[in-house]
Figure 1: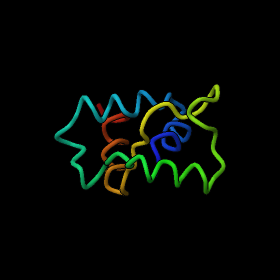
Figure 2 (figure 1 turned 90 degrees about the vertical axis):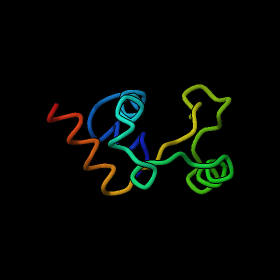
Figure 3 (figure 1 turned 45 degrees about the vertical axis):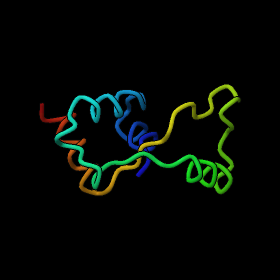
Figure 4 (figure 1 turned 135 degrees about the horizontal axis):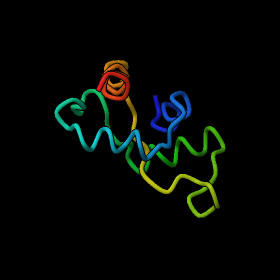
Length: 81
């Protein structure tokens, strides 16, 4: 699941999702959460017609992806702290 989708789902800004990961590196191991490569980002944009980086409102940062376990860790971190 993309960081932006999780943010929308939990009614927070995407940067808050990424801050939770940055502040808890021991919980979000690379097998639970990882960054897309630039090639994967371009491919994702072309498949879903998302806005370009230069457009207002476009994705300006590399997208973080969460596995099912990563989503669980995030929910625990956000709601049960």
